[in-house]
Length: 611
Image (cartoon, rainbow, N blue to C red):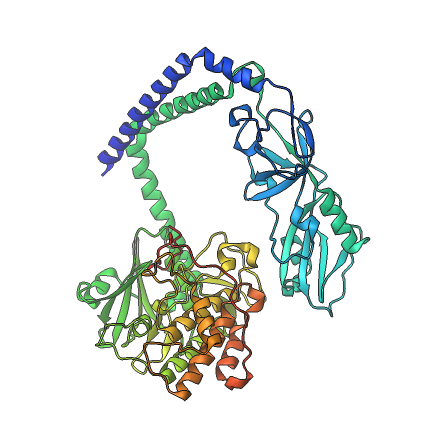
């Protein structure tokens, strides 16, 4: 294996050598006529775009070709009304109000905010500092606007009031995270928007201040590395020179690497493995997981009869049926050795070792021998819930009655309520789906697979999460895009709601068989059938009392999958709604998200995969 590794390095070395040779040849033989043509085209008088005039390098657009500008980032769009000029930075379009190429500054305006500060459509302003050439001026301040706040809250010092129709809003200096640390109750407001302004708010002006600030815009600086261009070297040659220098450096590094990779790789692998093992052992002691039975891997192998009976497979490993010496049947999950440094093992043990609830699967023991890791759970005779939902053509799988489905839905909700409120430490699951709901011999549901779980304080309403996690089709909008809101226990509520709709509809919420023209966002389909009084399970005859259960589960599910976390109920409220009389349930708003993209296949793993 190491020999193959070294050979790959040598192949890369030869490829880079060839590429560098071609680039150097192209650079040397670049026709002078091309350079002269570039100068003839671009050395023109400054041009006009919209209301802006005296525009020159590095900007381009309108009648100026791409070769006359510094990069794609400096393209200006001159609109047909001849009064507006816009530029796209990152993911957002800005109106260019002023432009000074001598000072390398421009003033940008978010026209949607300037036109209507109460618009429900916009989200956070794209962070200009995230680009490679643009930077906010030192005079720019962050402003955070909080919409849909309770009308009963007092306005703190340093905040301004904003009235949008019948709804109250507040705004203040500072980024969203900074403001929420000082005033945590603002999280109850419906929506937060961060925007840059040119001057701080000083308790005066209210909405008039916002309109004036957004209308005047904010200054942005840009910086160009112009030493070569000022010396008369065209941009095309600059790129080749830089590319050649980078390739030369890479070649040197690869030569050194090929000579030492074998020794270095072995050493790093050894110490990395030892470090991970020490960290996991320290974790097991700190979390008291040693109270569970610890097994050797040889015992795991014997317990599963050399992994003879495979029950299923998820993103973090395969599950096998086993039997303890006492004769008690168990489910043994063998974790994938390729999954990082054991983070999934730590997540699962840390979370589930804190639990004891009838609707949460019980951990009976574990194995940890280097990269060999296993978890031993109580055996669930009826397997996962998904086979009872999507059982088309599976005659061996019995259909569940509507009473069964309602009891299962209620049990899962009670298990989630326990995770969210019943432990000293709140546990967010982040992967609620039918595959991770196991059923015992009495069809009592139990939540399993805590590989993506996150522990947080019960007082912590919003959790910090560096990356998205979950399974396509069940992931709450805010998990992959913070513009929808903060990640919290409401994210589990969304996943639960999508699962509830699948239980009612008897199909997956992402239909792999749907073509582009007939594809429908699943909650829209459910909502339309409910609104029109159609059968929620066209493939089954539903009695009147069963139809009431189906409609109740559907309404609760639609409340749970509301786009914004603030509009979803807590899991405790979900339990109340499931147990309420049908007449006491209000119809939720229609879901507003569009259909999921067809380029994203359904994930069969426990980790989020946008492929």
